[in-house]
Amino acid sequence: MPVPALSPIRICDFSGVLAGAGASRILAAFGAQVIRVENPANNGSWDPLRAGGPFIDDRRGHNFGGGWNNHNVEKLGVTLNLATPKGREILPRLIAISDIVAENFAAGVMERLGFGYEALKAIKPDIIYLSNCGFGATGPYQPFKTWGPIVQAFSGLTYTSGLTDQPPAGWGYSYMDHGGAYYGAIAMLSALHHRHKTGEGQWLDLACTEAASTLTGTAILDYTVNGRGVRNSRGVDSNRGEAPMAPHNIYPSLGDDEWVAIACRNDEEWLALAGEIANQALDPRFGTLAGRQAHRDELEALVGRWTADLDKYEVQRRMQSLGVPAAAVQRPEERIDKDPNTEAWGLWPMVHHDEMGDVRVDGIPVHASRTDWELKRGAPLLGQHNREVFGGLLGMSDQEIDALHAEGAL
Image (cartoon, rainbow, N blue to C red):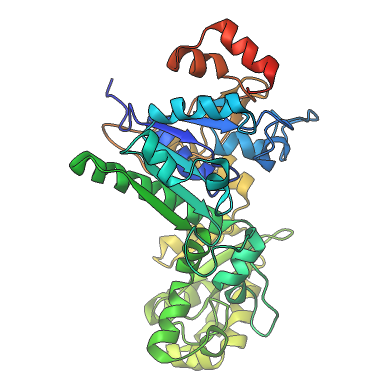
């Protein structure tokens, strides 16, 4: 059995929610030992997802958060109260045996706790420190604090999402947090490679707002090259303006709130689609891209009337057989339970959580032929691995650990 790619890398992890926890989660999947450090007060109050939904049944509490479980699979969980002298004595010992310290507190929190980068270097000179906060730990916006909708608005994402001639809709889920997580994982891996070559650690300063801004690439390119804003160039609909495809849209299909996507990239693909619709689709106005764009409303209505009487998967099958790009608009539950690639690709593996039982979590959308990822163990219960970490790694006796619990340090 190959040794996991990131064994024996160890991360002392304060990061939570998704932008932070998602970064260390990726490294944990590839074999890094991630020790999630939480505050014992208020049931792990550093991470609001611990007791937040979705839930698998009617049980509630700090060990039943579905988001918490998803973002913290394969991690060890310890509690450490840094407001106590004993807690502040123990943390340096944990840092000293770690390769990375990761956190996504607001800027300056680690310094106020006494564990900023200079303090971390004094404990372990080659430590890698990832700080991931909304506006970064340096720069003019450093004092600002943020949350998902603010990141969306500030980065430019909110303005780019919505229907033509309608107010901005915003981005429903925290895609910018995922972006921050991916950049965090990349940064930690690059810093590990640098340390392997030079022996030097470093501070990784990640601003989630800047990570989100990278998702506005086409709009920024159009502005910098052509001087046009997103609303006066091609709107915010994929099927409007100068996109060199028509038809190119989401169309209704048979059933309640069922849809299918179709994109014709050239005249040949349009003729293939038109042959399926009816002779009326061979209207000479639609014979060229320019004509289809000039009469887009009539074209979209024509295609929509045809798809409305067909099952979305039937449209997908027929279009793909003709070489026309098309896909049924799948709900998440359809993607998970009905798509045969789900099991084959391992996109949503089952892990075992010690209180919730067997539950699905997000997999990693890449496979390595020699050192593939593995997700089997659910997120830790609050303080679940205190004895394993403080006893097994730091050499504390059971009596010492019991005394620390009694004092409120663990």
